[in-house]
Image (cartoon, rainbow, N blue to C red; front, side, top):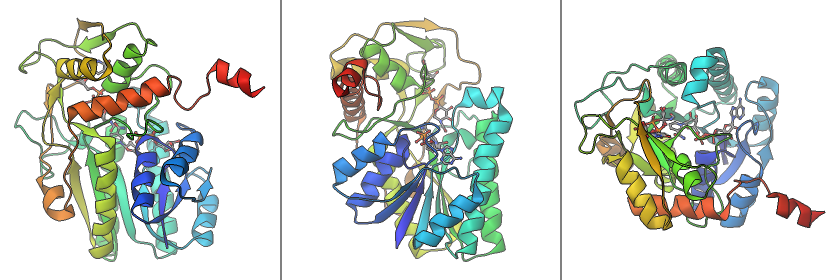
Length: 346
Ligand code: NAD
Ligand code: WQD
């Protein structure tokens, strides 16, 4: 029996593969490599010293997905595959609705056909309506503000309907807060295409000299230093949350949402400060206008995941920054080889 990991070559998927393999699970990875590199999987093998099959297929191609379920005995699925850039989703919403919704529909249809009804889905804290009520718990009102977020919300609703239609399903909807950091080996990590949209990859690229300076979006929020506050969570803690969720869906039925966050928020300036210490590099920055759509504060109440999944984030800010920096400084071009390395291969 194996766990199918869709989007397993991506940032969170590759770290989760490490966690699953180290826990003794067999995994099968499916990824169309639209936002990742197969090299990440070679490095997962290097870290875990375990082998696993990889299928470079698109979840939009139902028949190819079918073949994977025919070739392997799948006991549960962790579904990361999807498009995730908020700005792009506003510009090309149909890509997001197609890739995120149709992929998930295809996956669930094939799962149903093969009587595989245990699913862990990558949702996001972006499904919550903006609030100034403090720590966000799973029963807070939902209201996504962009097509990406709406696609996650729609999928959550669709998966709940699936459970209502057939109570044999067991589905965990994991709402991630702000994933950061990398595996402590420095072998796998996050490498966005083009200019990063998110704070930590932007900071690491400034530190390594790829970008000149950071633009801090807004210095006049009602927070202790005027900059936005978020719940940054180490990607290895997040990966461990998937392991716990797999154990949960194996032992229960239902369709339940769980926050995966630390319960503690840090401001942009606190992130810069922590990163400066860990990297021993300067991070030049300028405070500019707020980014449209941003909110002042967002952090999780993670108590449901603690109580129901037995999961708790254990890694602090210094570890997040140190591990992000190790990955970035050892792999300034992500998984791509530098020109010098390419020349050495010729
Ligand atoms: P990622 O882009 O690194 O990983 C997603 C992977 O899915 C990529 O490897 C991509 O090639 C693959 N993929 C995309 N469409 C596919 C398709 N149709 N068929 C097969 N493979 C496909 O992103 P990530 O940061 O690892 O995020 C993983 C999941 O978690 C996504 O669903 C994302 O929306 C969600 N999420 C991410 C964050 C974050 O800040 N990183 C926060 C909340 C939720
Ligand atoms: C964090 C803080 C910015 C960049 C996004 C998505 C969300 C989820 C996680 C997928 C904010 C500030 C940022 C920069 C800055 N992804 N910032 N300069 O916006 O909380 O969440 O990623 O589900 O859906 O919306 O994360 O990293 O973009 O921003 O000052 O160059 O850093 O204003 O306060 P965000 P982020």
